[in-house]
Length: 120
Image 1 (tube, rainbow, N blue to C red):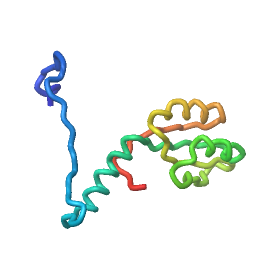
Image 2 (cartoon, rainbow, N blue to C red):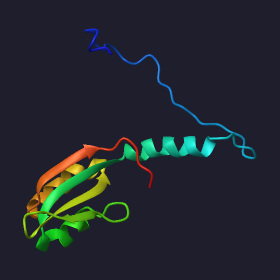
Image 3 (cartoon, one colour):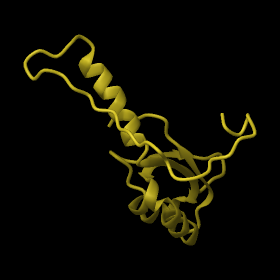
């Protein structure tokens, strides 16, 4: 990488490019659908992050309104009585605002992690 070689970027880019997937409408090659699903899963993952947090049971309904997930959030009981752990995909560009709202509701241990790929 540039950093490992002790180099730095300077100036404007000299080339920008994009990848395009092209096939015939009538006859798609073997493996096309699997390849397309894999590419799509990476593109979807770039738009979302995984959010995990702990919250008191009495506040969980309000919290999952902020983090509804794709289908539904995962809510699991914790060893500490009266608390649950919640896990949900949230839009990447709204993550900080959602974290603020969860914290105000009493959520703690709020973690946000990248998603490498996902199929929804």
